Image (cartoon, rainbow, N blue to C red; front, side, top):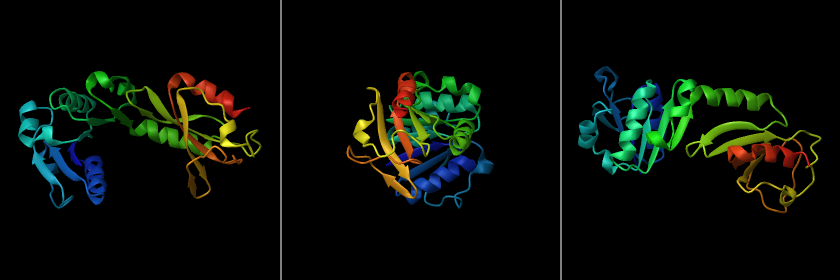
Length: 218
């Protein structure tokens, strides 16, 4: 898979290394010449250009990329990159970094963003998840806010203990995707049983989160 990353700061470089290690073809686009360092990610293609300029993106060959990741430290720049990638180059998947949580509402399909990643919000969610038992915690927003990845840790005295997965009556727009139990990652089958302390991961629309909370108490 060919991936373009706009912004070769610490975040962009870290993502590039991970993708290269997973055998993806990576192009780093950076307008600040002082940030260009081919030795930092030798296997990546480095392009000195402004990712907010249409001509620069055309010259870089963005039309050949399947994924664009906007990781600059400027939310305005990330939105412009996302919009150009989606509308001018029809990039299949656009991921954008949100630096200021107050701007998160802008990172939607209208600006070409498929997935918005807010580091402050994710860190807050991780802290909340670490201290919350029995409460539904939103970890990540998916698909322009149409669905979320949510987590709940079942209390030890959960009424679900010993009951099969099939007994959990979830609403239509929700799915239990994983059960974390100790060091195990379990793909839940209908006959599998819940245990107190299980971490349940759901993909669900915002509208049905309250219904999930109700289902978990039965």
